[in-house]
Length: 77
Image 1 (tube, helix red, strand yellow):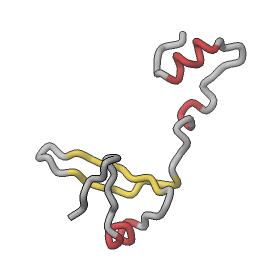
Image 2 (image 1 turned 45 degrees about the vertical axis):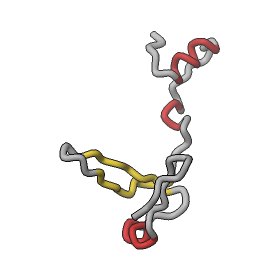
Image 3 (image 1 turned 90 degrees about the vertical axis):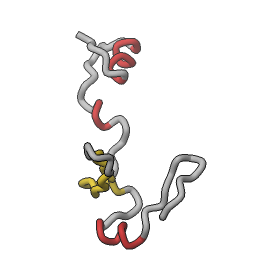
Image 4 (image 1 turned 180 degrees about the vertical axis):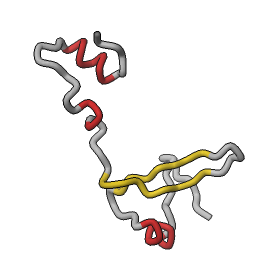
């Protein structure tokens, strides 16, 4: 059993980390099942920057407001 810390973090047991091949910087996916179970899956590759999904999205001449709308997921067209 693992306790949730004050920062809402848990330690993944070593045998699980070893089984999944997890190391510092690994991506981890959580999948919620309809019956309430949670599945832990090793993601692919190293963790991406939180800005990686925006790479190549901004256009030359965009205003600061347009760029901020892009980061919030708002339609900029």
